[in-house]
Length: 69
Image 1 (spheres, rainbow, N blue to C red):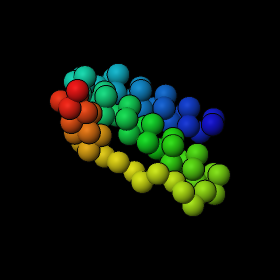
Image 2: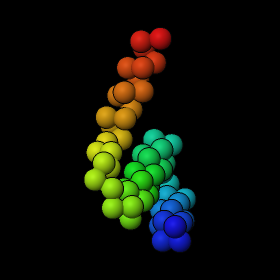
Image 3: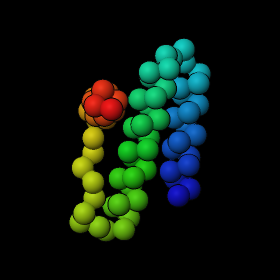
């Protein structure tokens, strides 16, 4: 957990120091959360870890869900 928080703060620092768009910030946050989930799954030695999904695929699913309502 400590390494994950350190990684999160480092990423947040890098993003905040550069002039990034909101889309870049969202993408980075999503990827950090994917990394944390992957690390937790590996630590639990689970064979049923969720496959990693790209941010673009995630956004497409959100848009499709929004349009289907």
